[in-house]
Length: 134
Image (cartoon, rainbow, N blue to C red; front, side):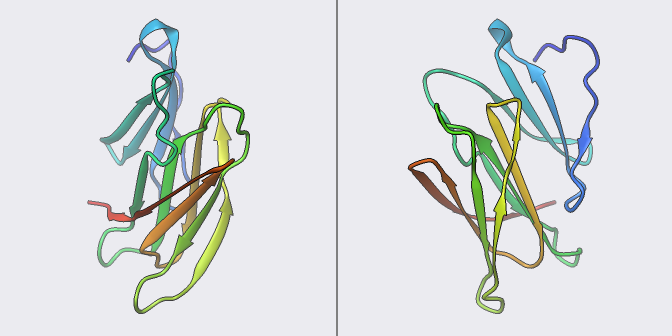
């Protein structure tokens, strides 16, 4: 992915993960997601398909509990809500309005012990289990 000047990393306040907006091939918008120094995901805008829920993670075992999800906005959608849900021992639910980035991506995070996430973006609804961070 090419950078047009140095774009700073933006640290997410709850998970501590970082994101950066850049440009991909053909000057398409791109979102980079980092877990520390490790690249967790690079998502480049394409007209062929949209990954509404691109990634879903939670804290490493023994760490302070948090949940994080990110993805792409479908055409014509400007708002996304992430519903983080608990597991067997924690039945808690948190509805988090996502932060929209560059009009094409979104990210949402929450403090707490969660096991899954359901994302609502316009008429699209996608669910996934949260994967443990390394």
